[in-house]
Image (cartoon, rainbow, N blue to C red; front, side, top):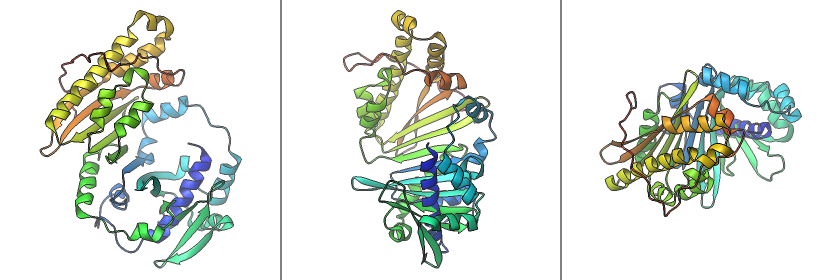
Length: 358
């Protein structure tokens, strides 16, 4: 992510924080961890919510290796000046981040809660250089223009180490919106399942996510049948948890139909088998770098698909492992895994859930 985008995000977060804190929490969370409190401030009508615990991730071996491997971004003069003036460097000072995507017809806005080491006086002074402030709900809110854009970001301090940010045009309406009890309980249930994951995203289905994923997927992982089944899911969650030098990724989709869940398990297993077969094709062996091929095969062989019955909903879970070797290989060249065409029958694969999957 470009550091100029981070500046805009941080500015938005600051604006929201000032106006968000009205002496109550939207989801009636009176006590709990900083993670729980940040998630409780997310709007319940969001279509997606992302959470990242940077302070926890920084202590893991996988992230340390990832930072060492990843190409270092070029120095950004604007961001360097921002760090100097505000005293805030997201790589060093950002501890937790929760972001909600809220749709408004064809448009969408972002609402973020940022926790970290914040110099309130410096950040406020920085915002007032090009922005403005106003008293909203008894707190000072800041509005900062986005460079090269007519929109503005708004932020406010909820506490000295927490700010709320948005690029929505009506901050007051966003903060004052009442949450529906049913929506709150549905989001909370999924957050609780992901308690052990320092990074996760939760999507509530209201659009054709399967079609969107199909357009972005590598050739060998593209399947119209899979896209159709993904569009039937009501909820999708993605979670990552570093384990030693690996990142264990868990993707889960929920639907109400038993038949759809069973079919999705079969299709995902079939796509994995086709992708493995493509990598073992003699022509692909000649074209693909051996280290890259081994990295892709290791990812596919780590994949485990299972079905979970939660009563009213049926979930399909895909677990796989990302290694530093895979990240390095993926960064060198695009995937050349052959397409799983609509006319090709997806093979069946019988799997036994691994121990330790929850």
